[in-house]
Amino acid sequence: GQLNIIEGAGVHKQDLKRYRNYLVYQIEHANIQVYLKKAPLKEELKGYDVVILALGAIPFVPNIKGIHQKHIHNYIQGYRDNQKMGDKIVIIGGGSIGVELAVELSEKGKTVSIIEKSDELAAASNLLYKAGLKEALKDLPIQLFMNADVTCIHENNVEFMQNDELHQIPFDDVIIAC
Image (cartoon, rainbow, N blue to C red; front, top):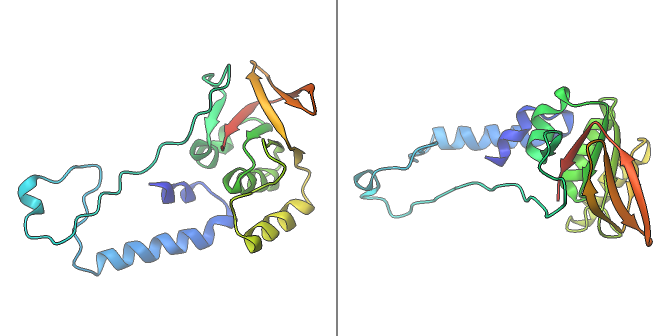
């Protein structure tokens, strides 16, 4: 299911789109039975040596006051529906997904801020990937707030603590990518 976000994504996801198309081609040309959005019946599973259940994932929703408002989106909605969002975007989470999404939105002309809890962007990513993200960020006007903890999402601003100081960033939409 996560590979479906590439339909709304821009040029940075073309490799992933080619990979998804490759997987679809391989499955179509192999002796593999695929059930989408339907559980197979018990008798349909007889005779198989292996059954793989790919149930998908649900985006994480952190416990932040005000997170369940209409202008708060998960990262899947961020990729899929960003053309419907306003010009000022705050992304909560500076992992690889948050940074990639920030780059894409900034290149589309959005004003983007990232609020990251740690002191490193894309901390779980490999060294070469991080270097590529840093290079992509270098020439973009993306505002970064590192070592920052979001305390509340108000109607039109995100409140966070950084260096023992309370800050607020105005937004049109917020994307949760943590």
